[in-house]
Image 1 (cartoon, rainbow, N blue to C red):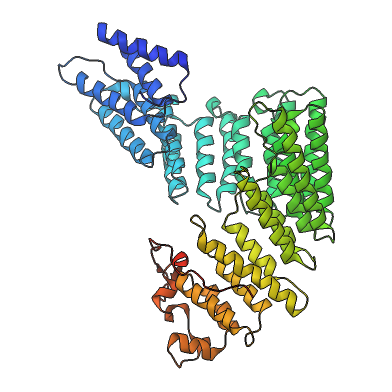
Image 2: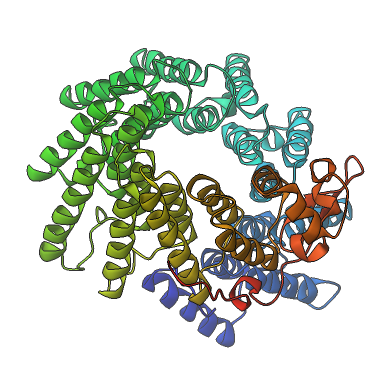
Length: 582
């Protein structure tokens, strides 16, 4: 079968024995279904379907052979549904149709059953992000299943769980509401005698996940209400609804993203409940790194003045647990980075100092972890994202020479990367934040000129780079630096050079054009555009196409959009600056 990465050695040997036995004796349906299962678990849906096609072909007419049954088809359906192949959704629908046709032609052994239809819903779910109609298609399948009188074709709790996942993956606004409705419907159907619809922990966790990822109102309260309902059923004797660590972590995430002013407090309360349950001997719930990191995220999103302090307390607890050997509670890079963001959002006078202190703790602790780790890897080591957050803290600080602080951090990143720290490679976001930090430099004219010189130097680095290209945020940040640091009359040579680089990059969109138009003299733009019209009456559609060739702009006609394909060559790189620092 080739690259069967997810098949263990025992199954590989079993497959080889099966193939060998097929060469010596006639295989039966168990043999074929075993081979189909091996191919499916190896992530080879094409191989599985090829085996199925061979079975159908050899068993047709008087050719003998082994006829596939519903298990054979369901195995191939599952292989396609779980694959990342973009053809998966289409193939499952076609295979289901083939099953139906064979059944209608008299082959009762391949009649689609509940597993067949649920697997097709799973395949539809995999395409839900690109297909807005996916949940509607899944709902239609469930409706037909509900209308069936046969138990083997009626939807069960697994089917409804897949339906909630489909809504969740679609990102549609109604996903959270529909998840709650399905939970309510499951309880009702179970009370009406449909034992296959008995709710379990998984379907509740998936429903809470839909709430946690939704922008709907009151998602924190609604997720916790589901969690409380689980606990009520569990304490009443329903072991199938025992809340787990994932249940609590998902409810914490819902509070973290709820935009509720009390969300962080509610999240931390759930975290304390997890500790209480663990101490009481409940083996289903145990706080872990994810729960703590999500709780820190809740403080980050709270934007409260004490957010940094509260996040730091949780972070220090995690470090303390790690010192005691509780590795399930050790902080990782996400926890540290969320704590940094919490300090930034708290807007305290010492936020930058606290963020820098967290960075040094990360570096020191990760070094120690690497020394004692056989793999030499630490998941608490800082990454590019971590350093970008520190750069953001510099940008938002009131430090008098923030441009110099930003330069020091950028140089440190480059040095660490050159020294072999591959996870700390400056990316375009690093430079964008760096430009913004320099743009906010204060002080006298000399100080602002020094900050702009750093912007120019960084631009030259980008030009010389083989892997970094400006994005939609780069040039607006550079022009913000021009506007804040330069005098439109005294520093016109610099401004003109930046203008030439900008238009040659083909990156002038609506926002950037408005920024340039608000800063540059109207006569200058009129000359560049070769027009006498009022530049404030012009739109991005009036610009030369080479100015906008690498951005998407809206068509003038309502409802239509126009996009230009990106150039095959790096226009920005080709327009290498000849500017020298002052």
